[in-house]
Length: 178
Image (cartoon, rainbow, N blue to C red; front, side):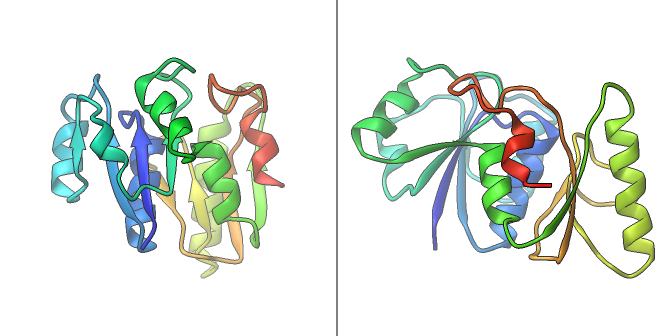
C-alpha cells in the first residue's frame, strides 16, 4: 500500500482526491493548519487521519507529498523535510494526471461555467451508462464526491490554466493530457 501525505485539504477537490485515493487502496494522511469544520468532521467521518501541525514522523513510510494550490511554499517545513528524505512532492493536478494517464480525458476550460459544464458532461456520461471518472471543483448534486477515480476509460476534469501549485510554474491543465 502506497502512503500519500496531503498538505492542505479544505478544498472540495483535495478532499475528493484524498477519498478517491483511499478507495484506490492508498494510505492517506493529512496536515492542514487551517482545517476546520465542515472539513475536519468530513475527514473524521471518512477515517482519514489528519492534524493541524506537521511532525517529521508524519513522513515515515510516505511515498509522495501531495500539495494544494495554496497553503504551501518552498520553505514550508513538510516540503523541506520531504526533500531531505527524497520524498517526491506533487501537486494534486500532477497526481490526477498520473492516475488518469490511460483514460480519454475531457477537460473543460474557459473563463466562466467550467464547473457547471464539467458537472453536466459527467452526468450525461453517467446517465448513458459510461460511469466516467471525474474531478470537479465542487461536489455536483448528483454525485457523492467531487472526485471519482476508478480507472474508467473516460475522465471529465474541470481544467484551468492556473499554476498547479506555488512550487511550480506548470498549469494544472498541462497534467491532464486532454
